[in-house]
Image 1: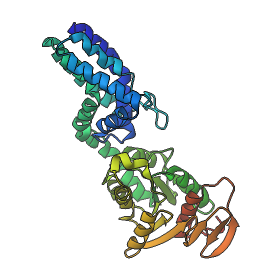
Image 2 (image 1 turned 90 degrees about the vertical axis):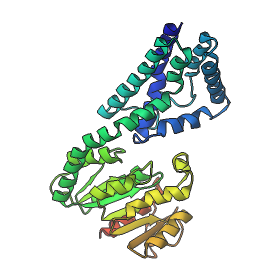
Image 3 (image 1 turned 60 degrees about the vertical axis):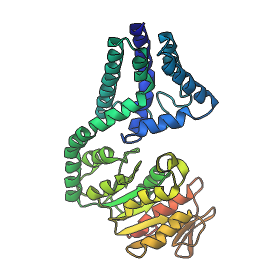
Image 4 (image 1 turned 135 degrees about the horizontal axis):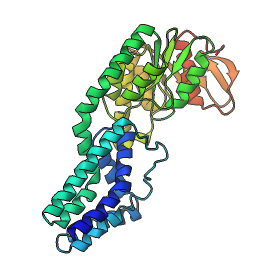
Length: 355
């Protein structure tokens, strides 16, 4: 029976495993992201809670009746709502993801083989039941390997950035980073030669690749989107991509499952200001307004807003710079993103009115 049970579980590992390695990729390969998201999703809604209970009953019941273990692969129909392919960030089969998939798969097979060898149905189904934990274990094992593999590309990018001597604009926020980056690159290109990081290349390897492949002699400004799923991640990025201008767009609850409070989100995102000469902060959120006041003691801060008094205000009708209305707000523009982009122009000496 354990051989048959292992075969069924092995088939279920494929779709279930794809879910959790995609989560790991989306979460910048930071353990224990798979386990954290598994807990969150299995407890999300009556259907998922029922499937989680089914898997738990199957795990316990297999100790006395091996066929009960079949409830565990059946439960892998969930978590409902967490798709295998993904929507916001589809699975990308990069070399790093392949290494993760191979090691996690090998660990699962090892658990299955031990279970079959000991004729233990609970051990067999535990390999499937604990799949997110196994993915996180693989992430921990691979962490030093991945760091060593990426170091040469990061070092090359740092040398290239230093040689080109482009001003770096670094942009972060809970949301709106990519739109602000695109607005900024478009507006600055009226006066300067600009290269922006493509798509959502906002982590260590993505930014290293963007610099190595796209930065060319004569580039005057490199606009880098920087994301973070944990404290210290942006600080590490700014060590080798030191920004002249650092911008914070918005803070919201989209990262609460990782940071628990908005205050912690602000602390992690604010690392982008630590090495900057000028900061551009949208003060619409009270926590960002407080951050702007605090950081103004140590570096130049340009405050922007969609309604609060600031150097640049983009509301539903007008664009205001230093108290003077300079233009109508473009139809369809995201106001906060445009305000930050214009603040970056101001920081780099590009006339926001002309832009």
